[in-house]
Length: 176
Image 1 (cartoon, rainbow, N blue to C red):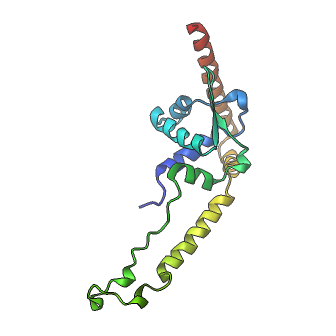
Image 2: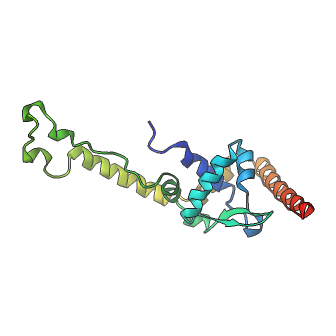
Image 3: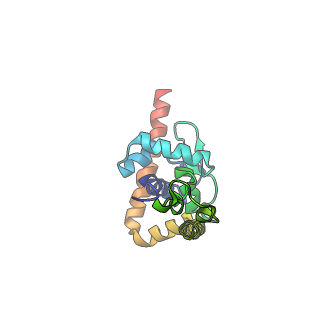
């Protein structure tokens, strides 16, 4: 069983579509969802969490949507993990060491003294993982994507989003 659900992965992918866009090119949750073939409601829920955490800002109006609330260099993967999943421990110690057939439901004081050695190892691992996630930024992820995804596909994706945004603006003016 994974520690973090797929929501973290989806949230990071969604945020990557905001990297490099300026305030005039906000992305709608509907467009981001359709581009990734996801439920619009699901993506909207992710963006609600991301907005509450201060990672994205909403822009109202027909051409509205979301943009990053701060520079991609200033948004860590840990920020996204905590926004989507909350801060939950890697390991939950059950104090198994105080349970033994020899204790007859009355464990001696020494059996629960101090931090369990297993729990200590897990706390150390969690601290290292959180430190690593804290040092990895959205900008670094975007840089990796930029190296892996062919430029033609990147251009096509930008054009797709730009056309969707322009269409939303025209539809809103026709309806007024």
